[in-house]
Amino acid sequence: MLADKIVTLKLGSPLFVASGSSMRQVIETIQQAQAGSVLILDGKRLVGIMTERDVLMKVVARHVDYDKPVDEFMTPNPRTLRPADTIGDAINLMHEAGLRNIPIVDEDGVVIAVFRARDVIHHLAESFPAHVLNLPPRPNQKMKTAEGA
Image (cartoon, rainbow, N blue to C red):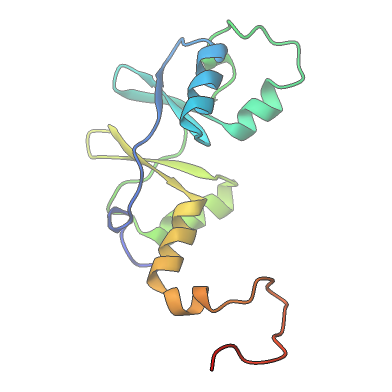
């Protein structure tokens, strides 16, 4: 599974806003899409990412002018991967860099998807359904009797 290419995953379409958009617009966009991140583009070029964590740490409960551009709060020049990179590469990057969202770009640098931690969980559940579906409700729980007939 770790050697599988990122392109084999069912990744959702990324959410975009233009560089210079107000924080108000960005937050509304994230809320409407119920997304965990939004990519900031200058034309077709990726210039940054704004995540829920960025909003919580840099905007919420601070005296921020919500009409300021997202560029002042985003994480600039986010790390990216390509579709031919492996799931293992993505997990390793997430672990080492503390990332939860990694933009996936094609050969021209155009964003085509976002790899998220939950994509790994979905892939595991689809790859090993018998193991996942037979887990007890709590990881440390031991069943007193076997289920079934």
